[in-house]
Amino acid sequence: MKMNLQIQSQSLSTHFPLPLFPPKPKFIHAKPRRPFKLCCSLSAVSVPQTTTNHKPFPAEVSRTIMELSSMGTLSTLAQDGWPLGVGVRFAVDAEGTPVLRLPHPSLDNRSTLHVQLEQCGLRTPQCTIQGSLNKLADATILRRFGSVWKERFGEEADVDNLYIVDVQRVLQMEDFNEDGLWVTSSDYKNANPDPLRDFAEEFVNEINTYNGEDVLRFCNVFVDLDFQVSEAKMIWVDHLGFDLRIYSPQNSVFDVRIPFPREVTDEKGAKSSFNGMSQLAWEVEKNFQARDFEKVKQLKRITYSGML
Image 1 (cartoon, rainbow, N blue to C red):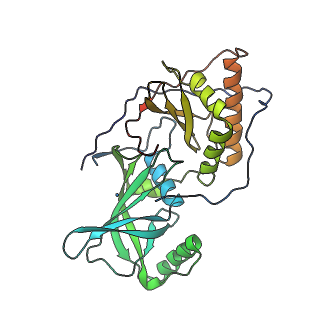
Image 2: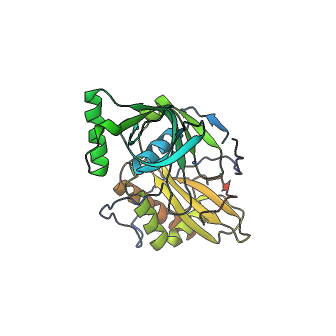
Image 3: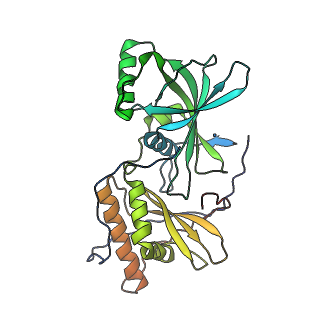
């Protein structure tokens, strides 16, 4: 079933130089990690994993969703021929293969596993895995996936009830009411989940709580806008940059992607890059330094605001 894509975009090209300068007085510190809080059913096109606009590939996003989640909706065909979806718990192995514990087998092994991740109440990316629901029989494989289950949930799995979804393709969607992109099985299995995933939510919440002025300044300095921003919030952060939700005085809503000066791989690098960009934006705004970078030009108009 085809869902209409409700966005409006232009072109994007930007990288911000990171000069040497004294740190701005207001900055963020690394904090100890804490458990990630999670929430956890369309025309689409396949996307090649060859280009990027400073965003993770759909395969990487799907792997991140699956790594951070532990609940989803498994849909199969029931005996009467109707599709039936039930809530399930799952874990994933190093290639993103879902393992489930099911009390009763399905007569038809064709299945989908739908999983979604709420990002700070502003966006809900999701992925739907199509594949064969297979019962594990080999003793070695059973032990391996039993270990995966125990590591995820801290409990022994009844090996007689363990199944895997043999991934054939994945539909990745950025949010509700948007078109999806098909990801091949090989791209999904070879992709890496985002290295910042375990502290991304805490990072975003801290920025929105204590660095609201910086977020607004980023909009004015780094983004090419023809309106005054009335409010701005960070949506999510990953190893290539972060997404902002911005509001205009006319109540229009947009998302914008701002890349880091360079790829980061850990919490320390993300906070260091944010602090450097904050200092640069402040110096440009105060005319202490000339702007020598190209502004972000791509805006994505948001017409669905059910999470707000």
